[in-house]
Length: 191
Image (cartoon, rainbow, N blue to C red; front, top):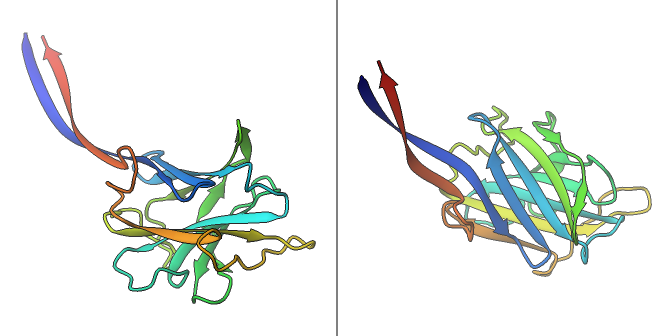
């Protein structure tokens, strides 16, 4: 009998980030090429006439607003309402991407938190999407605001209660193991 020990380094893309007191973001790898995200929204913020969004941009950016950011928005009162957007500048609402690279999940509620999910490829090939391949330096943006009577998203407010960002390395963004690397040992017994 021969025992063979194989060591393999494995990266697990997973974690959770508190964006503010009413919103958090959870992410996990679905497989080697895609990731699933869940935006949690406290029921204190929830309204049928409210939208919420989260975005990503390069951490080496000198500005922390919407410009050059990959954004996903949700109308909270609707099921499967996520939209793939790109922040072309700081002062106008982000346009919908010409090519949506996200798959909307369904809205659900657990306790006092509404959950909005989506999946996307880690690398989409879309110039308007942030690459999740190297998340060592990233800015995570968040915002929420009203929806008008016709269902159109309106501008968020200009206070830190309405919008904000967190900048850092996803391995230490107040996440319990945002990106975990570990060694997996496999023992194969050959007869």
